[in-house]
Image (cartoon, rainbow, N blue to C red):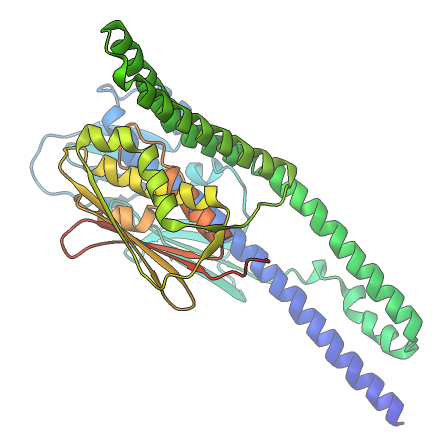
Length: 435
């Protein structure tokens, strides 16, 4: 009797735990779907503000709808009376009112044009407690997600709800502990455990390969961004060297050629890193001399620093512990932050300061500048890919820096100093040399 009671208890506990785990997996998958849906809706809504200056005077929407099919029509108005920023219409439409211009936007069409179709039992978009668009049935659901779009003109609340897909649960696997505990055969248990571990390892290996393939587009875009600056610097150095030779003034030519060679070596290192990511080569961790690495970053940016007369200073604590990391990664992080600081102070006579100290069993780096600082919008989206405040910017520099910091198990935060300039705080955990 005791064996039967033990078998029943173990079976019930095992089945309940497996069922809860699979339900949690379903919830996490749906949460990921909602985050993707929210991000795509945010991108679509941001396009409305971007397209307004490009709209033609005529109201022929055929050409515009080829690009943004959710824009039904627009109209211009010259009256000075204030208008509500959002005016809901029937059938999921709303007017987006801006000075001298109003857009009629169809939300169902916008949802149909999303790149990835994510289905929920109920999906709604509302503004100021006013329902703008609704899909599905608002029946009782177990899971609920709500998030407000980070937009000044269209701060919509995106809500979704769903219930577990009971039919899709692997009931046979959930009930398998009954057979497992009934048999209680040690060798079979060991065989199944080893086989399961091997299957998981194979799946992880396949998943890693698929992940690398899917990220090739992102890596290619990142390499274009990273190679643009050294190539521009090489062209500038070579043009200056040619000009000096033609003027029969070769004294500074070796220095310019050395600077060009340094940039070429940086390109070679970047391409080697790109190859490592594609071929799964292990990235080498080395002991980094932060003062030397910072001087190298400043040397790479020497042309830009001199052109706008930016003053660079630094302070490294005497008790600073060694940092073990791929040197090129840390160099890329500081290079992108410093490059942004230079571009933010294009008017000249600015400054950049690096402060390095030990903090919380790690190394803290703080980079500040004398620029105008980051706007509230930039503070929220500075690490989002393709977000930029410059007309010719790509918007990948800080996104790549954030990715590299995360790969080093560190943190990065953006803010403004009390004087108004931008401030980036980085923290890297200490890592043993043998690791």
